Image (tube, one colour):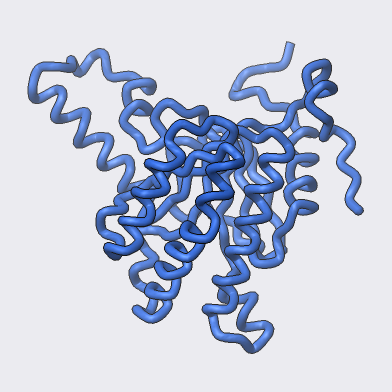
Length: 251
């Protein structure tokens, strides 16, 4: 069992630092390679990846993480074969149908980020149902990035701000970082403290480009379908060992 010396219970966490990251983001990568190594269809990897998501939600609830943002389907993923895209969308609907009652009971709020209206109609309906059913929950916010791209998000924010300037509601010289952040999909939420990248890739893949300016990265060769609580604890241990200065100096 991996020992994580700084991961403490709630009472202990109040007394000492470092703390559990409030906001964790995960690029759920490696499903296809996991299946390929086992000579299985890619769909098997995606289905096993759902099990990892379920495990992460449970772990975050147990540890007291407040926000979990997962990269489920990017704006670039439409380039994949239609059969694979269809499988991913069906798994999304299946996950929400099976898990929504328990997620709601556990106090999880489902929040999709990205242009979900371009998803298949069954997925849109299920997402909207999940959002409505869990909208008052506060224990854990689960942001699911679907048809999401960091560049597309920034373009959307720029357009929204430009419309305000055009209408006279906003002056150019009062546009600040806070104004931009308020027009992003994650408006009102703190930026991620920790970004986890399974599968050993060293890139952010167009994910939360604005929000991860000072996020701590943790990369592992473990493929997403094999990712479990012990890996999350290892990532948190690494996070807790770092000195976060946000561009300044520790005095």
